[in-house]
Image (cartoon, rainbow, N blue to C red; front, side):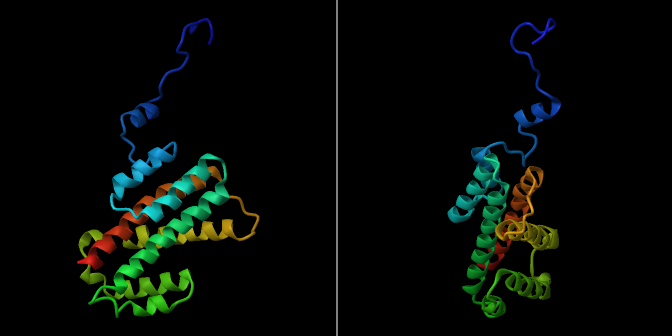
Length: 187
């Protein structure tokens, strides 16, 4: 409030704010409910357990608990990957091909083995699945996993608010790719 603005309101909406209000930025969120809405808009069939951990990650983010947020986000990412593996295991054609992935004990060897086998069968996938597969699956899960490990093990490294926000956004294309793969292996 000043002499030029002596009546309410004393602010204006920025051009960025206008875009958000007009919903032109699909990955913008500012609370748990808007994050959930963005997730469900992009991945309508998302699993309830995955969504539970994502909402917990967002709640931790909103509370300023970046370590907790990155751990919960890592759990959500690993859960969605494990669900994909369970689905593939039931597939009559691909179950035996990917069987060795389930024999691995921890997530990193599972991811590496899965990606290796996936690359051998890349020609069998639709162009939509092949497009950005390395980036939206392998690249993003590696980033989320690294931050989760740094946060979940006492390293003393702090995840910045900005980095955590980016990780929450990156989960969306990762999960979309997981669900594209789930669609392929369901057929």
